Every structure is written in structure tokens, then in C-alpha cells.
Length: 355
Image (tube, rainbow, N blue to C red; front, side, top):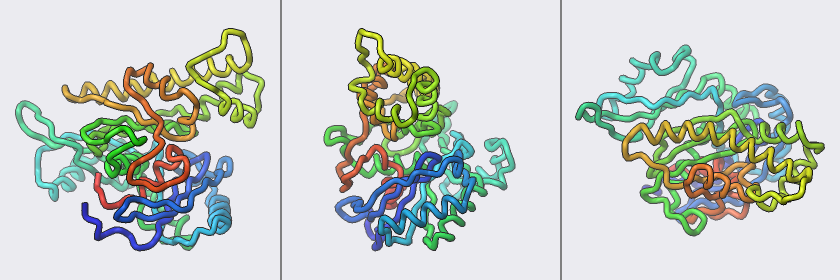
């Protein structure tokens, strides 16, 4: 691992979503990543939607005030985003030198991107080698980000007098954190393991399959915490604040008391909502597992706000018959907060491993 390029200054890392902005301030050292400031900023309703800035002035105001309030001094900024507008494609191309891949992809870009390729910034990663009729080929993960999303976020940071250095893609942040750390939750080794990272967010759920630290599949399922909450609110007599408190009081989502109660009704609705989510995730898993004969998923990693529901790991383990855990610690990370909530902005800080 080459550590000569470690940033000398602290980095401000932002993970922007439609529900909240996650903020961490820290740096990468020879001993690992050290985070010494972290907090969340509620996103004003309607100001940000699906990776797109809707009300720039309002987001600018909120960010400026909260960064000042939390005594953030760092200017060098890494930004992590995700959107269903970001396209990912698994592409098979002839085996060529690395320098030639870009030219091949540009020539075939219209086959992979259904809209105007000129309106996207395209990056790629080699995810493996495959054989077709005994001929070796390259398996490429193509990532296409709309230029307007990149430009609007860049302008937001510049207007805040920050120095934007990196725009990261949420699945990439998560994959780097796995590759960088040999042990998860003090117990699970990451070497030679294929993980499915499931980030259960507010608007949607991000599913990323990572093999040996390399992204294999990255997809978005349009079901998240908002969908689950709305299902409960439609049938239970709670307001949003009461619902949040009730979710914290769930002892185990997999166990329901015999007597009828509003609480038990809420758990049943929640379990049915998660089943709808898991049916969509299962399609992604089956796509990956059938793509190559030796593909497998060894473990599911759960993170995001809805990973905090008690018993959620067992719910996923039972549905997929795959060991599932909520992310709670990484061996090369010094962080006192709730890691499952801050996986993306923390992972973005790490720059020395390319995935």
C-alpha cells in the first residue's frame, strides 16, 4: 500500500441525500482513518431529490450555518452522492491493454447509455476476466453520471467557499472501506469474501456486491425507509414522530406477541414492507449468481438508518439464507459514532486503494 499520497490536511466529507446530509471531518493516517468530527444535517423538505439539487439557495444556507455551528475548519472536500440517474452497466469487451479500454468504450457508448452519451461523465473499473468460447475477455463496470448533477454539486461547494476535490459514488465508498479493512465487527475477515452491501436509505435502497474489494454489481431499488413508514402510517394511528419512537422500541422485528395491539400491527406491516424490498433485492442477487458459474455471496452487510431496527439482521439472514450483519466497526477506523450511518462519507475519505 502506497502511503505517500495521504492528504496532510483534514478532509471534509459530505454524503448528500434527500433526507439528510451526513458530515464527517477527518483524515487518513498510517494507522488508519481517524474521524474527529461528525454530525447530520436534516435536508429541508423538497430541497433535494434523487441526487438532484432542487433548491440550491436553501441547501447553501443550511450547510453554511451548520458547518459554522459545528466548527468545521476544513476546506478540502470530498462529496458522495447517488441517484437513479447514475447508470451502471456490466460490459464485456475484448482483452486489451488498460490504455485502450477508454477508446473501446467511447466507440460503443451509445449501446450502453440509452440517452445522449455527451450529457454524461463516464468512468469504468475492471471487475474481472471472463471466458467466452475459450477466449479471454474483460468484464467492465461502466459508471455514467449526468453532467448536470456533477456541475450543480461542484457549484454548490464552490459557493460555500470549499475546495471540491473528489466526487465519489456511494457504492465505491463502501467498497473502499471493505477493501481497506481486514476485519468487520471485530470478527469477520474480508479477504476472499464476496459481500452484498445493502444501504437502506430514506428514498431507496442501494445494493452493491463487492468481491475481494472490487465492485461487481451496483443497483438501486426504489424502496426505502419512506416507503416503509408510509405503509405504517396508512394503517396505524401514529404521526411521524411517534412512529420513529415506536421503531426504536421494537425488541425484535421477527417476534410478535400473541395479543393484538397497534404495536404488533406496525411490526407486521414493517415485515411485509421488508419482504417487498427483499423480493427486489433477490432479483439483483440472482442476476449476479447466475452470471458466472462460481459466483456466490458469502455475507450481507446492512447499513443506513433502517439497519438500526432490532432483529433486522436475522430478518435478512432468514430470507436469503445468507449470514447478515449490521456494520458496527472496522479494524482500521477510529470513529466513536454510529458507523452504519456514516459508511459512505467515511469510505470516501480513503484514497490510497483503487477499487
